[in-house]
Amino acid sequence: MELNSKKKLHALSLAEKIQVLELLDESKMSQSEVARRFQVSQPQISRICKNKEKLLADWCSGTANRERKRKRESKYSGIDEALLCWYHIARAKAWDITGPMLLHKAKELADIMGQDFVPSIGWLVRWKRRNNVGFGARHVLAPPFPSESPTPALMCQAQPPLSLKDFTPEDVFGCAEVPLLYRAVPGKRVPCDQVQVLLCANSKGTEKRRILVGGLQAAPRCFFGVSSEALPATYHPDPGIPWSEWLARFDQDMGQQGRKVALLLAARVVEELVGPSGLHHVRLLPLASSSTTPSLPSSVVWAFKAHYRHRLLGKLAAVQAKRAGASLAEAGTGITELDALHMAAAAWAKVPPQLILSSFIQEGLAPGKTPPSPDIASEMPPVPSGLSWEEFSRFVDLEGEEVGPEICKEETGTEDQEGAKEDSFEPLPTKADALQALGTLRRWFECNSSSPELFEKFYDCEAEVERLCSL
Image 1: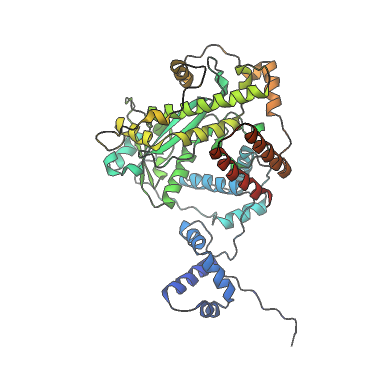
Image 2: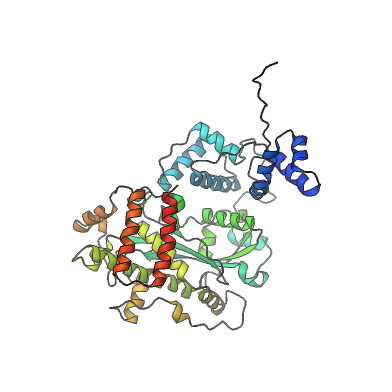
C-alpha cells in the first residue's frame, strides 16, 4: 500500500457543468450528492454554482468549446476578440480560411492595436480551442439562383418590406459618418487633420453606441503604452469606416440581448456593403438615394460637433497656458489623436437623450405626432468667450466650408518639429507619478477656491487612482 498516493483530480467539462446546474435546479439533491454522482469534490460543485451566470453565458453563446474542462483566458483578449469577429465575417462570405491566413490576420490586428505580439502556432491552437473554431471540409449548398451576385435592388425585393412601424422606438437606430477636423482652430483648417467619426443612437435617445473613429495612422505615437481596452472609443487606422466589421459587431451585440432592431442607413453605404444578408438581428432600412433626410438627424450631429468644438477650445486654452506666448494655431499642433478620441467620447456623452428623441420625430424617423419641446438650449454648450454665436456656428460647421490650398502640418518645418515633440515617446507614468499628481491637483484646487461639488468628484477620482495603485 502506497502511503503517498494522491487522489486523481477529475475536472468537469462545460457540458457536464451545465448538467450539474440543471440537476441542482430541477431536483432536491444537495451539492454533496451531486458531487458523488459526478465523482468530484463538493467545493468544486460550489464553485460551479458561484460561476453559474458565466457558465450559462458561455453555453448560450454557441462559440465556446463545450468539451473543454478548463478555460484559460488569453493574455491578448482584444486581439482574440477582433480575430474571432473577422473569422465570422470571412465564414459568412464563404472564404476558404487557413491557419497561415489567421496568423497573418492576427499579426495585422496586433499592429493596428499597437501591441507587440507575434502569433505562434501554439497560440492559434489555443485560440481555436477557446472559440470552438475548426477547419474542415466545407459543404456549400448550391444556390437556387444564378451564381451572379444579386443587385441591392433584388436583395431588398427578396425580403419582406419593413417600415418604422414594425419596430418600437427603442429598436430603431440611426447612424452617420461625420467628418471631423479634430485640431482645427477658429478661422483656420488643415484638411489632412481630418478623421471620420461614426455616431449611432436609437430614436428614443436611451442608447448611444460607442463611437468609432477612423484615423490616419496604424499606430499613432500618442498610443504608446495605452491599452486598447482603455481607449474611450473604437479606433480604426484607415480614414474610412469599416462598415462590414462594425455591422457584424452590432448584430452580435443585439443577438446577445435577444433583440431584433432596425438600422437607418444611407443608400450609398448599403450599396457598398458586401453580403448584408449575413446580419441576423439587424435589419437595414436604406434611405432613398434622392432623399434629403439624413440617417441620423442633422441636429444630433450638430450638437455632437458643438460639444466637441467647445471642449477643443478649452483644451487649446490649456495648451496656451502651458506654452507661454503660443498662438491658438500653434497650440493646435499639441492636440493628438488620443486627445481627439477622449474629446469625441465626452462630446457624444453630452448630447442629451431628449434632443435625440425630438430630432428623430421632427425628421420623421421615429413614430410620434408632435415632438417634445424641452429647453434644448440649456443642454447645449455655452458660446465660448471671445466668439459671437455666428462665429461659433461657423467654427462648428468648419468641415462644410470650401477648402483652399493648404499645406499639411507634415510638410512644414517649425510646426512639424513642435508637433513631433508633443507626439514623441515619453516615459510611461508610474504609480508614484500618479499619486504625486493627485496631491498637486488637490493643492491647486485648495489654492483656487474650488467648490465642494468639484472636491466630491475629485475624491471619487482619488479613491479610484489609489485603488489601482494598490493592485
